[in-house]
Image (cartoon, rainbow, N blue to C red; front, side, top):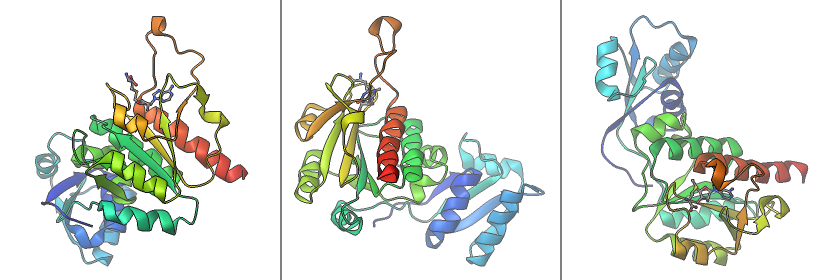
Length: 255
Ligand SMILES: C[S@@+](CC[C@H](N)C(=O)[O-])C[C@H]1O[C@@H](n2cnc3c(N)ncnc32)[C@H](O)[C@@H]1O
């Protein structure tokens, strides 16, 4: 793992997850003075148990660190933004023992979409989420907040060259499915129970050409109501990620 500069994360879920999963990187927690919300009280005792400094402050102080985001009376200062290095991906796949479930995002730009993807990915129990280091939104304060803590509880692996990563994953026995609305094969015809990577494209451009070329198969999520005339040509990337991940979850539960 590598680390970056100090940054604030805000919101009850994000702060609770940081305190629970990443206490060594949380330098202090600010909670609204007088707030009786039981979740805030829980955060306070969890932080104190882990020897994290806790200060009760007024709303203005929280507004000041939240930078316009809704803080819900809770903020935490990170000494380090935790990120995973690409050479850790192999170990994560191997530890999944033939059942790795990877979400790969090829150039998502909107922090709310990335946050929503991370939240669904965590709920689906993914092995890791892979994002490119360039030309894509990174895990920032808005992503952390939107992800409801997921950004700190699952491995988010940043890679330099997505095509090379997909090739390396193939060598590890991971089957690469690219999600593309115009593909012929249906998501619901796939077997998603083994090592799989689900690759989704960015909001405007979808999957890049090189990324497509490195997929073993392109597949579509059938949209019976999808119609250019109706203005609905594709799903939002975070919705597509949710549908795809939870089809994999369904198959893994049914067996
Ligand atoms: C908003 S869409 C991108 C639309 C973009 N204009 C394009 O040409 O692909 C973002 C991503 O969500 C996924 N996606 C959205 N709708 C989909 C569908 N019906 N089937 C498969 N993937 C879909 C794809 O991976 C797509 O790249």
